[in-house]
Length: 288
Image (cartoon, rainbow, N blue to C red):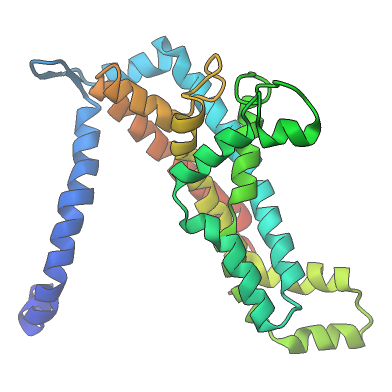
């Protein structure tokens, strides 16, 4: 390492500013967050408490377990529906010429670059009980989609599935374009139906892209916050409290930074284990 530095000092000099930025604004906060999870913070200072924050979260905080169940419910609803939607739309628009494909990809990608705050405000109007668009279409009156414990989380899932998937459509379309047409021509000569071609050729060759989208979609779903904060505040009756929203409430409403940091560490471990499991179970026989 030292020999490389002496041989190419300018290379490391150009890398240094980016590394310093990464260390100050990402690496150090992560390390300090882990340290904070072992401390108890008050208005006048802090003290080392070891694993007391973790013990409190696992044994004396029932809302933590509720938030984990809600987050898992949200992710289990969003990821498969959102990925299925993106895959279906990509397969439907792929046979069109490039200009039409570009139009549809741009249209579906537009919500991805739109502020999540704006999207949440629009859907608050759609779900509004007295004059919301959804109640008007269904012909119901004053049904509170976000005010009912049975429909609040499904409503949030519906919103995310409809608005999400733009970047996934772009990636899947690009992956479809990289599959050689010779495979399909040979399959047609052998008498394969379009369904058999999709199952035997398209899906196996899309596995790397689909695996990436599943992993990233799971991570994104476990980190959902903006929609919850703007639309439900975790209600009604804590039915939409997610783990990230609970971390926010614990840190900036209760000012228990130690417990909030411990929750963040636990969330990191959960996401890491989910990622490993997905790579192990879904990454088998992946064709690169």
